[in-house]
Structures are given as structure tokens and as C-alpha cells.
Length: 373
Image (cartoon, rainbow, N blue to C red; front, side, top):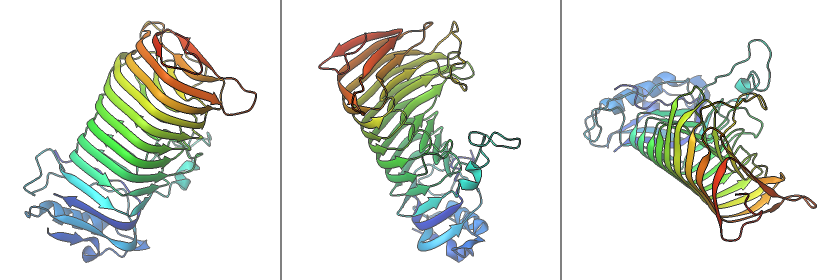
């Protein structure tokens, strides 16, 4: 299939190479100026087409160091002819380098409906880098700044490793998630620094076997599973592990959020070894998620959340309810385990409590605040 790896980016400042498992195809050789002003989109397309059609074992597209490339949203499409590439598009793709991809998002943020609800405002904006149906994908040592919306998206991918990434946008920038994972499996994200105006990492529907570790998150909305089930669809999310995360100044920490009209299951989830500093909602399950606050109504459906472990996590909460397990009355949460969670108030004189609504489970170890099961 052709649209196996779709890369949207607006401005690159670089040493980056896109490698397919070694003939080299340098974008400068195809007419790129690299001055930050000239449109280098066609040069990138030509360099990619030559890389993709090369029959060498490991053809490489080279984006050279020390240049700034202005590029429109473009598509890098497969299948490619390299012997290590399968017919399902651009598999075995490697991206490595210390370059920066700058989405120049401020102009988009200024007309976002989340900031400016005037006539003509927009709800959707470009994603800087999107991978669609890529397998055996590796990306390391890249920097992303100021995406118009989500910085990096995985859609329908299997066997992915992202490491040593930096993603930066203002905390006030709308919908600028760091990494969004959708309909993907066997994803490993490690050693990342993410600050943005939405979730540092969000996990969507039809995902499984996701391992996220060694991430600094903040500002932002935390690490979220969801939102799930918005249109009443069947949800399937399982085997998600989030560990060794430093949350600093985020609106949420470890979050699961579902719409009341959703169905299906979220199961086998682990949040462990988390550190919270001045976090508003360190641990939260919100099964009453909707677009307009306080407008949700109970329904006879709900996503079933089962087998969730919160363990060995410490820090400070800016809100009184540090542990908030607000589950569905139609499909209560089951087998929730809280094991050695120590949360203190961020502000002097404040207390911290836990709150449970339709949540069933058990507390282990020494927990503060005492769990509400």
C-alpha cells in the first residue's frame, strides 16, 4: 500500500538522515537551497523518490547538517525497492540525527477554536510528523518544536522504537500533543523530554503492547490512555506499561479517560515508578469525559476498565483529590490495585485525599492518601 509513511513537516534544521536498512541521496543534489526561505519541497520529494526506487540494500536519504529547509506538507510514500522493504509500504524505516523539525505553529494556534472561538476558527491543524502503517520503525535523537497540532503520530504501526527525542511547545499551545499512538502495537518509547499544550503522550484505540519509560513530561496534560469511545465504538486497549516518568507542573499525571457512550475494554495497565511535582491530578480515571465540562449524562453503556496497577509513585499534588478514580456506573472499574503511592500537598496547609466512584480494587503497601476502596 502506498501511504505507509506520511511525513508532514514545515521547517527542518538539521543533521538528519532517513535510512532504509548505501547509496546516499542528498536533498542538496536535487535542488534544495537550505536557506530557510526557498521552498525545498520538490527537492525532498525527488530525493525520496530516488531513495525509494534504489535497489541497493540500504539506500539513504540525507538531510545535511547546518542547513534550514522550508518544506510544505508532503507525503513520503512506498512501497520501495530495497530488498529489506516489504510490500506494506515503508517498513524497516530508520530516522536518526540531531536535527530539529520546526512546525512554526503559532499562526495556527492563533486561529484555533480553543483559543479564539470567532467565526472562521479551526479545529484541525497539521501534524508535523505522521507515520501511517509503518512496521519495524526506528527514530532516535530528533528534536521537534512548535507543531501546529500533534507533533508525532503513529497510525496502524507495529514494531516501533522512539528514543532520545525532544518535543517542545508552549504549555498554552492548543492540541499540541507530543506523541499520539493509534491502532498500533509493540511500541517502545524511551528517554524523551516532552513539554507541550496537551498530552505528552496519548494512547488511542486499538493499541496493545505499549511500553513508555524514562520520560520527562511538563508542562502538558500528562500521559493519557484516551480519550476512548467518543462515537460509541468498541474499544480495545491492553498491555500498556508506563514507568519512570517525571511529571512536572502538568494538569494530569497518569490518566485514563473514556466517553460514557463507549464500549469495549481497557485492561492490563501498569503505571509504576512515577514522580509528580506540582501536578493537578496525579492519578486519575475519568469515565465521564466530554467536550463541555459538567455536561456529561449517565448512559447504559461504558468502557470496562480492568486490571490497572498504580505502584511505587511519589510526589506532590496541587489539588486536594490526588487520587481520583471516577468510573462508570454502567461498567464499573475492576481489579484496580494501588500499591505504595505517597502523595503530599504541593501547597502548605492543603490536604490530599482519594476519591472513588464505582471503582473496585485493593490497596497494598503504605499509601498516602489512604485509598478509598
